Amino acid sequence: MIKKIVVIVLGAILALCLLLVVVFIASPKPTAILVQQLFEGGVAVKPHNYDEIEKLVHVENDLSYDSAHQEGNLDIVAPKEFSGKLPAKVLSSLT
Image (cartoon, rainbow, N blue to C red; front, side, top):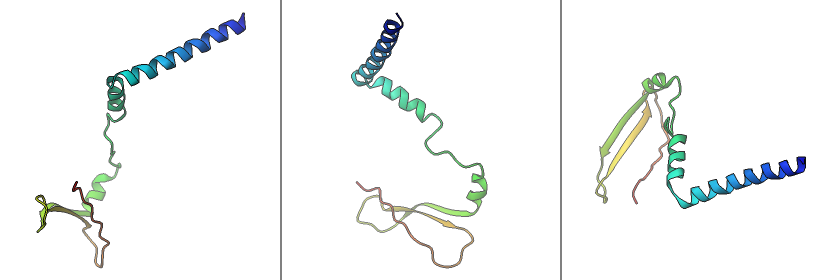
């Protein structure tokens, strides 16, 4: 009797899992809803002391420079109070 109940419960769980897999494969909508729920608060979350950090950093956005590409712009992010050499990292979004 107990063995029969265990088999029925496991069968129901397996059937539910298979149904979910089929639904997620057959339609993109459940996946889109799931991803939307996962990233509802945003991908990047600012730390609690973000205002303090922001006061220590100088940011210049969309500076134009001579480039062979149509949109030759760059952003500079550097500490406000620093003397000496800083490392540079160049990121390109050209495709």
